[in-house]
Length: 80
Image 1: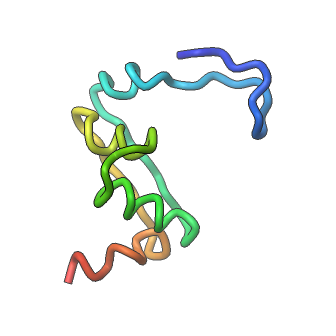
Image 2 (image 1 turned 90 degrees about the vertical axis):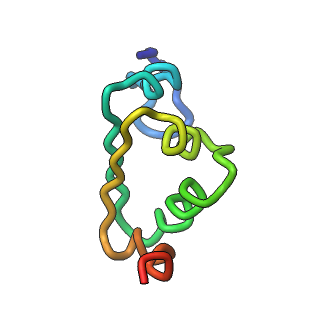
């Protein structure tokens, strides 16, 4: 973990997990809710893993992604 004192988005003071911490975690659980998350989920699962989220999804040992119907919207054709 790393302490962040002046983050550009709220809250300005927070703790954040580093990439090594996420990649070495026993399990990573991501909750993605709402249609605004759909593209990020699709890109992480289908893309080249260039974003931090995409890297974690592709390379972490055990990742679970929890989606609501709206967040899963762009993935529905993959499941049919």
